[in-house]
Length: 123
Image (cartoon, rainbow, N blue to C red):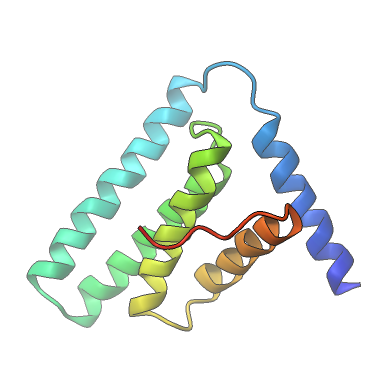
C-alpha cells in the first residue's frame, strides 16, 4: 500500500513536470523569484548572526523554496529537481530531522531511481 502510494505520487510529479507546454505564467515566475529573494535574504541573515531564530527562518525559507522549485511550472524538469535537491540538502545540514525536506528529498531520489537515472550530487 505504501509503495503504491509512493509510485502514484512519483508518477503524478513526473507527468506534471513533463506536461508543461509553452512559457510559464508571469505569476509563476514572479512567485518563484520572490521565494528565491526570501531564501537569499534569510541565508545572509543567518550567516551574519547565527542563532536559533535566524536558523529557523533560513531553514523554513529554504524548504519552501525547495518545495516550490519542485512543483513550479516556472522551471523546466531538468532544473526543478536538481534545484530542489540542492535546497533540501542545504536545509537538512542545519536541521537533519526536518520532516518536509527529508520526505521530499527522498521522493525526488525515488523519482530518479524509478527513471533509472543517477541522483544528482550537490553542486
